Length: 106
Image (cartoon, rainbow, N blue to C red; front, top):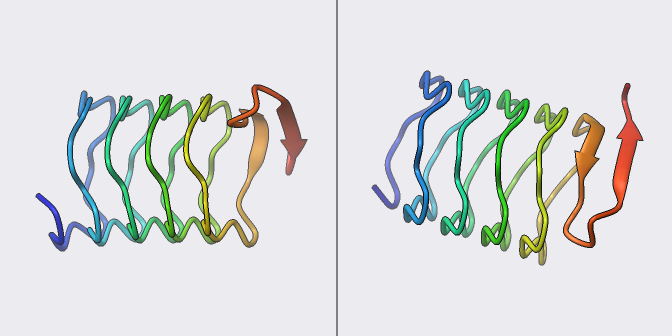
């Protein structure tokens, strides 16, 4: 699925463990409760995506664009966020890669 155009897709509660979605366009997608544990999301466009409650443990988000994404309650434990863009992202009760919990935008 790498490089796919899935903007606005409804993937609510999908289980996509280990999936390679690198360079995929998921702008404005509904990823509520999605499980992306150990997925490869290198360079993915998640601008404005709803990622409420998403499981992103050990996920590679290198260079991902999360501008305006809603990460309320998401778990990013041990995720690689190198070069990720987080401008205006909602980080309410979000577990960050270092296991700290942010409450920005609550």
